[in-house]
Length: 224
Ligand code: DC
Image (cartoon, rainbow, N blue to C red):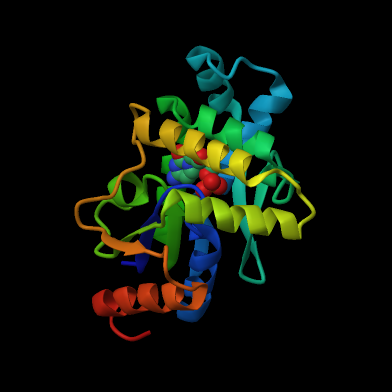
């Protein structure tokens, strides 16, 4: 049985960067499942389908080709063979990913692909439904969160560093809107699995958060 670790949490909890560092420490792969929903969201935007139409998005999900590859340990996300890893990081694609991910047919397709990958290698997987659905039998689940204002502050500073001048209030508003949507959809909403360990990073540095998660993993799987 491969070592499979689940990390879930809301927008901007630092899942991706923390998960990257934890995976590096443990020398295992990190699968960012949000990137797969983002790639599908980009496909939906490009196709011009109605984001509120379950029928249109289910049909689109049937024919989509989203794949993940690793280059020197880093995830690359491919849409019909095109590397879209950078293109999927815009605000427009974030909103599209959240909108398309509520439809069951879209989720089924992505979940199946994620479970297939998890079977092949030791992997740390982050997303919204990893502990509750994708790796529901995993013995090692973490729910990583922080207060919304702190998550928005971190995201705001990150974006500023990249030259994006979106005001803090807007970042907070968009973050809350996406959380609302992700927590209140009918299919596999974001929630903490009963057996997930809660890590609240509001008052923790990145290093402390990584340390805390590595310790949780070691308690389950032993020292790596
Ligand atoms: O983790 P992220 O912000 O890159 O995810 C983008 C969107 O994709 C998120 O708003 C909800 C959706 N998502 C999901 O529904 N299930 C997952 N396992 C991962 C992401």
